[in-house]
Length: 444
Image: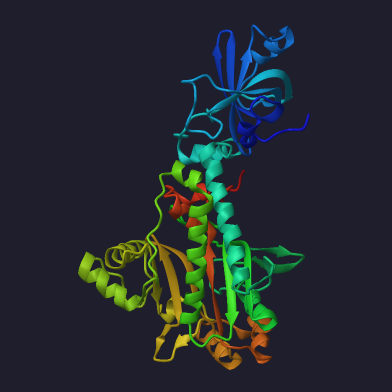
C-alpha cells in the first residue's frame, strides 16, 4: 500500500490507508493505546484497540515509545463527538490501526519530551541536544519561516531581473580588509574564509549588470551577544548603472517588503506558535542620516552615540523606537555612515567626504542589512585603499576589474537569520540557525 501524508488523511474517511512517521507521544488507556504520529506534514492520532487486535499487534503496540519510526495501516474514521482536537488539522479524524511495522527504535534514553508545547531548557542544553530539539514543532516552524525567506528572496530578485551567481568561499584576499577573518593553510598558501562575496558580486556587475547570491559568510568576531554569529547566510545583491545610492535602497525596500509579506502569507501557523504580529510597514520606509538620528536619540532619549563612530546596539534599538513612534514603521534606513566605519570600497559623499553613500536597514531596532554605492573608478579605489593603510598589491585582481570599465553600482547584504530572529521574537539568533557557529561552538 502506498504511503499517504498525514495532512491528506481528513479526505480519506472510510478508507484504509498507510501512514509513516515518528511517534510524537503515546497514551495508554488500558484496552486503548493512543499515539500521535508525526510526519513532515502534520500530526495524526492513531488508536490501537487491544481487544479487537490480533495478539501480535496488541503485543507490539504496547511496546511503542516516542520517536520510534513506524508505518501503520488502518481505517480513517471520524473521532467520537467531544473527542475532537481543534488545534490540529487532523483533529476531527483518527486511524484505527490494523497493521504496524517498526522501521527504527530509539536506542538511547530520551533526554527531553518533544510532545510538550515548549522546550523549557537553557540555550546550552537546547544546542547540545540539537539533533533532537530540531524535531520539536517550534523548531521546525522556525526553519519553515527560514525557508520562506530564502525562497521569497530568490523569487523577488528574479522579478527584479537579477541573475543568481555562486562565488568562492575560499579566497586569497580578505574581502573587507581589517582583521575579522578566518585564515588557514591552502596547499602552502595563506587563504581566508570569505567575509562576503563583495569582490565577486561587483565583478558580476560586469557580466549581468544585476546579480545576487544566497550563501554563507564567515566573521571572526568574538561576540557573546544574542544577535551575532560567526557563520550565517547572507542574501547579497549588486546592481549597475545607478544614478544615485537611493536607487539601491529603493530596490532593497521592494525586496524586504516582498519577503515579509510572503512570510505572513505562507507561514500563518508557524507565526501563531510564536504569537508573532505583522510588522508595521509604511508605504515608504523612512530614511534618515546617521548624524541626524544621533541628535534625535540624544535629545529624545538622553543617549549619546559618539561622533564619527558606528551606531551601537542601544542606538539601533532607540532608532527603531523612534521610527515606530514617528512613522509607525518597524523598518528604517540609516544613511551616510562615517568613512572610518565603512569598507574601503564604499563611495564617499562628494558633499561631505567624511561621510559615505552608505546605509543600514534596521528592523525592530536591529540591523538586518547593510549596503552602499561602491567606488567604480580604479584610481579612486587605489587612493582609498592606501588611505585605509592597505596595500593595493593585495587587491590586484579586484582593482583590475575597474581598469576594464565598470558603471556606477552598489548593493547590499541582508542577513537571513536576523530576519527570522526578529520576525519570531526569538530570545537569541542562535535559535534561527540549524547548527550555530559561535566563539564556543563547533559541534554538532
